[in-house]
Structures are given as structure tokens and as C-alpha cells.
Amino acid sequence: MIFPTQEELKRLREMYPKGTRVVLLEMDDPQAPPVGTKGTVRYVDDAAGIGVNWDNGSSLSAIYGVDRIKKLE
Image (tube, rainbow, N blue to C red; front, side, top):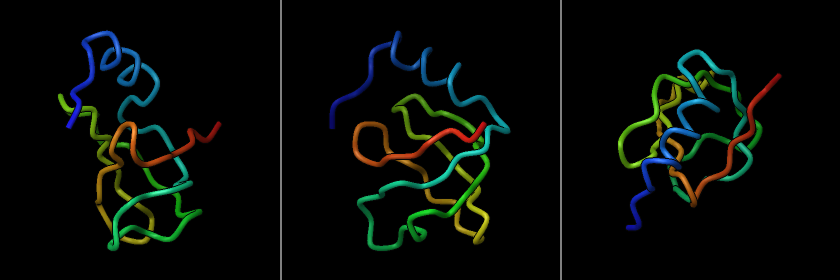
């Protein structure tokens, strides 16, 4: 696993503050919510995992550099 730099963490935390709405574009996990599922960001952890409460009840984190989410405006 490659850990993010402090600058990358800062940028991610600014881009995805708590409460930000996102949509799942791609997740490399057999338990992933379906593509297109929307959710609300809970946190960005020190390994740049983006904790999301998905609208379908899942709370699986999106992994920086592996999974893809898009911020909803």
C-alpha cells in the first residue's frame, strides 16, 4: 500500500469535508455498493480512505487511488 503525502491528505480533506455528497463511479471490492450509489462523506482517514455512509446502508470506505467517487454539486 502506498500512503499519501501530507499535501495529498490536505487536498482530499478540503475536497471531501464531512457532509459532502458523492456518487460511486467504481469500487474494487466484491461488497461494494452498486455503481451510481450516492452517499455522504463521514471523514478522510490518515491513509486517505474516504469514509462514506452510502444511501443503501453500506458504510464501505472509498480507497484513494483505487476506487473512484465523484463529488456532487
